[in-house]
Structures are given as C-alpha cells and as structure tokens.
Length: 352
Image 1: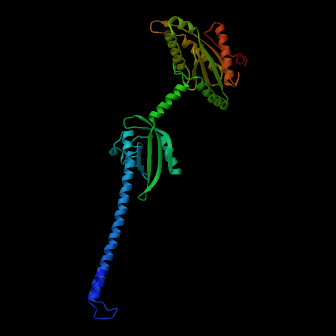
Image 2: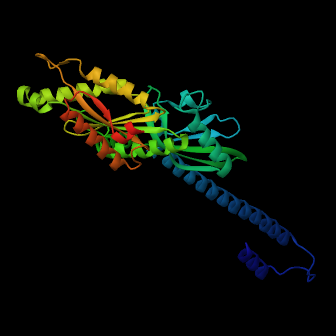
Image 3: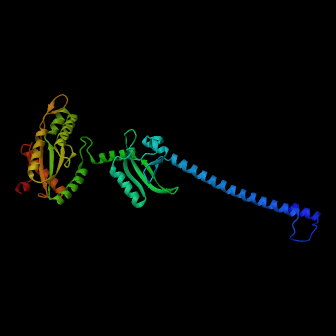
C-alpha cells in the first residue's frame, strides 16, 4: 500500500501544498492502513489463541495418556462431598469396577475400605498435610477379593475447587510372597508351629507385659516319650503324624495369648502368659498330659504316646529366656528319668 501510494504521488502531483489537507488518495490509503492493522491484530490474536488451545489440547492428551496408561488405580474425588469424579483404566483392572458403577458415588458407598480405621488415617493425614505417600492398606475389589495396596493421596485445586487425587499400587502378590517367606522364616515346616526365633520374640513381649502387670510367665519344655521307637517300628511318616497330632491337640488347649513352638525333632516349648498363680500352670499341664495320652490314628492302627514336661517360672526361677529354658529342660530330663508322662516345676519354684 505504501509503495502504491508513492508511485501515485510521483505521477500525479497533488493540487495543493497544504500538508494537512487530505485528498481522496490519502483517505483511501488511511482506510486501507486501518483495515490492515485491524486484520493483523485479529490474525495475531487468533494465532496466539490457537497456539494456546493447541498447548491446552496437548497437555490434556498428555494427562489422559498418563492417567489411563498408569498401572495404578487412580480416582479423582471432590473434597467437598467425597464423590468420585473420574477413574482410570487401572482402577477398572485392579478393583473390577466400570466407570459408570463408581462415578458419583463415595468410597464408603462402594465398600472399598476393609477397615474404617484405615480410612480415618488417610482422612486425618490429608487434613493435616494435604497428602499421603505410600501407605500399605487393604481394599475390597468388586468380586470380594482382598487387595493389598500402597495408597497415595493429594489435595489439588482445579476450577477453583478442591479435589483429591488417589492412587493405589496393587502389591497383593508381593505381600503374599512376603508373608509366606515370613512364615517360613518363623514357623516349623512340619507342624506349622512357631520356631525358636519367634518363640524368643514372643517371650520378650510377654516379659514386658508381665512386668507391667506384675504377673508370671511359665516356660515349659516338652519332649515326646519314645518317639524313636515309633520311627523305628512304623517309619518316620508315622513319627511325623504323631508330632502333627500332638501339636494340634496341645494348640486346642492353649489360650490365644500362649505360644507353642517346636525347636526340632521331638522337642517343644510352651510359653504360658498372664499367670497369676501356679495353679493355672498345673491345670494346663494336666490337660496337656491327658490330651496327648489319647490314642493317635496312624491309618493302619492306633498308637499311644506320652510326653514329659519341665516347668520354669519367670521371674521366680530366672529372668533370662536362655536360663529359663535351661532350667525347664533340666526338670524335663528329671521327669524322663523318673518314669516319664509327668510335669514338674523347677525346684526353686516349688520352694517358693
């Protein structure tokens, strides 16, 4: 436009030299300038808006790709009423729910939580710190399966409203393997009873409780009489059946707070907690002797076995677990030498 105007003015000289007097050409040129300026401004504005929209769309696509491709179960809930706003594909895979089944409902209405205490922990943590990271909890899937997951939650602001982003990492298989390894490390493979290591741990817990409540603990050594004869006469399978049968019978007698452990072979240990008087120990020991004496079915015939037991008391006889076991073993061998099938306290306990 400027080039055309210069050419026009060079060919056609203006009739007036008045600088401020505008001719037709100048008016048209000014109109064209203003029109082009408006068009350029609109073009730039549209270009910026389009670029911003493209950026928003790109970020939205990235969010959707990340949200739906995540292996975790992710859900968005409104902070105000706790209703689920959106879930991803991982949520459907792990918990088995379709989006239409959960959107608009709360986690309580869906019975996702196994424990109300777990939900309270998450709620309180969000109220105090606005986020929770990698807390192991259990959840219920749609089909009733128990899911062990690491839950993380965070409060975010979107559209001037608070939302909670929650992700659950399914570690059920890993947790099951860990629990199985823990059982193998702390329990006897034949009888399923606690082993020596777990027995010692249980004693330390019982000792702390006994000191706090001014109570006693009974440490009982138990040995199966003539197990070698059973192994030699009917085979080791028969001996294993005897050990398993005895373990089941004694476990039925003991209380939930007591511990029955196998140290190896035919050697067992019993930990009786919350003991007020020796009469309680005597009663349980008599029940054990009577229960074990019932004939055991080996499949082809029945066999009758007995056990010999020695009892040491905490804190009367000692306060150290190794010393208590040594003293209960000492009494147990005295019982074996004196005819077996009996229970006896350590001599200082009797003197007391």
